[in-house]
Length: 488
View 1 (tube, helix red, strand yellow):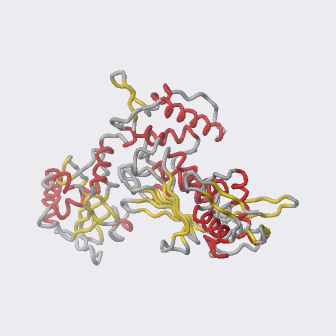
View 2: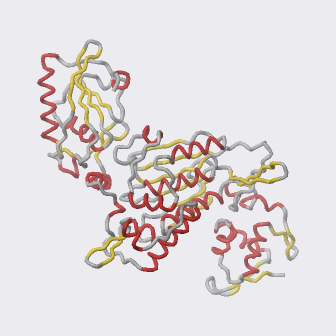
View 3: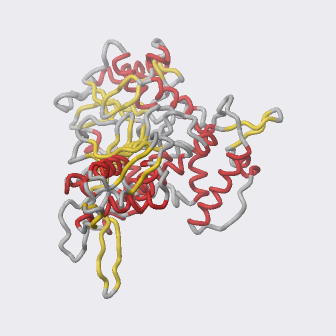
């Protein structure tokens, strides 16, 4: 590491000490944290507040280096062997202790034990690792991922297995991949299923791909009014097989962003205001790389000015922000990643962020940003909040309520301005769609209507309430077994 970087200030992988503290624990936290995350350098002889090079007494140089080596070797479990060397800066000598990212994680201070002595590096500080992080570090050290573990007591059914095989085949076909039959035997080869004592056992990946068994395995989607989380306009929660959650979450976003059209000669071309490729990539990556030991769920949030996708867990196994942005990848969930690849959901490892940025550039959108925390990872795709004056007719969104997003008409669909007369009353386009559904099936539920016409349940309920008040629509019987009547 060059002088400019090494002495430009403390960071996630650089820490300064004027002298060696009397108590080794004060710097042992840093050594352990470096080994548990991305590695780093502890520099002795620099003031951590002023960044002034103070230096180390040359007569004490080698005794100090020996003392550091012995203290680190004796105090850390598993053993950490750093590279310790002197370096001359501005005619003064400092000691640089280089700690590599460790492979036998978790590392901890022996005297404090694993639970109270495991530290990780977060934004330039060494912090005590929370229990879920310690568990993940243990699996990193064992070279296994959580989705590979057996889900004890979970019953493998033939129906769920066949559905998964068929869905993988269907996804391959849609992705244009070579078609081949996916059988139960193939799931064994991929370690999705396991054989033990003539019994078929499910991996955690199998459970995630076939059910809603794990309560944390869900995707929460919401639309907010404005640019913060003060007012909900719509929210949905999707469970079940994670690839179906991805499809539902993508559809939710498309229903809640604007769908516009441009005229190319005599041809009308429709496109969403945000690139579909970027939306899919954001949500797929969130599921592929999330920390499954964290009981939080994936969140998809739509604001007036942006789309945010947040997944539990920070960067995995020492991966740095710079590596992520340059296309490097470390796979946190090996079996899930493999199935996503087989389905054609993942095209090339490490390309997700670059593909999102590239898609935004093609749409002339601001550059997407990535936010990394110790317990979460967030990708932000910005919307173009200015009205398009280039011949597009952006305004009516992809089936979801335009007014919910932009405060138009008190929640009515923007395309409802062409009203139709019904029973002497005016009905909007949205209400007409509801009536059409009821005309087809008088027993249909409001929830099914919302799904069928692609609008929020709240929007459908509000419009039904208005039509009942205007005596356009009536409800007979109980909420569950009753039926609708369109009043002519």
